[in-house]
Image 1 (spheres, rainbow, N blue to C red):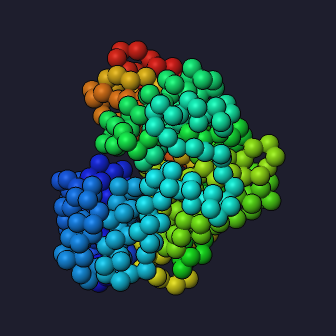
Image 2 (image 1 turned 180 degrees about the vertical axis):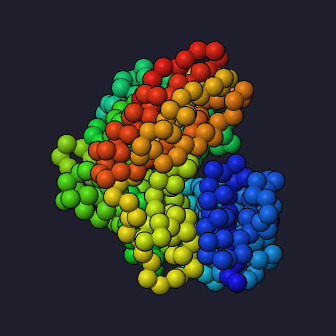
Image 3 (image 1 turned 30 degrees about the horizontal axis):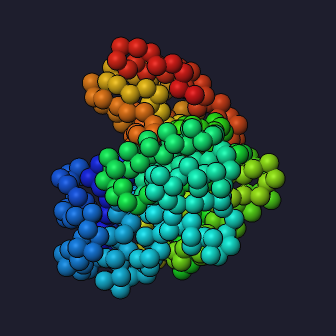
Amino acid sequence: MQTVVIVASCESYRIKDFMEAADVLRCRAVLATDGESPAAGYDFLQVDLADPTAAAATIAREVPDASAIVAADDSGVLTAAQASALLGHTHNPVAAAVATRDKFVMRKALAAAGVCQPGYRCGSLDEIPALAAELGFPVVVKPRRLSASRGVIRANNPAEVVAAAERALQIAVAAGSDPADGLVVERYVPGVEIAVEGLLINGELVVLAVIDKPVPLEGPYFAETIFVTPSRLPAEVVGRAISLVAAGCAALELVAGPVHAELRIPESGEPRLIEVASRTIGGLCGRALAFGLLGETLETVVLRGALAEPNLDVSPARPAAGVMMLPVEDGGVLDAIEGIDEVLAIPGITGIDITATKGKRVEALPAADRYLGFVFAAGEDAATVEGLLRRAAAELTVVIDGEDVGPLI
């Protein structure tokens, strides 16, 4: 029996799906995490993910027979790379893993390789207004090391960029970042946004899905809602996007494991690379994807790749699929999410997972790092799936602090 180590924050959405994927492959699964294990019945190793070098040494010492080490979320990327190096596995260089976790380091590496991306600068809170003026408005201000749109704020003029930078730095520091890290400011790229989900095998990009985001993401905050695959963009545009992601991976020297990339497509049709993460798509969004004749999960495919299994079948199991993330429009105490039974009764809706807890406080972007839940759909084409998810959004009512917070999208 092969052993796989799954590295993740104890608060990660992804743990259950990865552990179940290991079960499907009849592997022994060991969870390496930074708190009490949320996965009962599995072997568990507590590590300090804030110290990747020490965490990696612990994994290598305690699980020397591991056949693969996979990061389930951003928090485990550096640890997984270092542990893989210690055990002699094919792995992303630690510097490459660092680049995917630091937006400024990533931007510099992409720029050095001539990869098409937004114009950017990095500086202290006091420097951001002048740097934004150099780039030209509108701009987007970002913390260097956060994900899921946390602290990402659009600013259209000098007054807005001052407020955006102050808020972004406040969010970054609250999340544990050093204020001396500064902030990244980028030229805003108008246009549609897409995601590319892939798997690197010996440095080659295997595309698993190209995902449209049909609800415009124009700011000031960037709450993602509907994802649908396959993309409805022209084939030549999708091809250029995939080529750009492959070039980005090469520029960052990524060679192995899952990749989740975000791109903007302006009216010119020439994609610009927004970000590359060396992990799978976040939250529970991966549950919308299924592969091969058996409908294998995204996590199963990722583990097969990590175990170097031959003849991976990454063909989509369904003609079209999608997911809607339920955003938090206003912070406060969640009283109820109504209409769930009505959504589940819609033909083509394949499931709904509410991840927020009734009676607990929820936060809205740009500070939030959680969604209220996820709705899944499948159909004969992407337009049908988008329609199903929009219908689901119309059926759901979110009540926070005793008030209906309004339409979800």
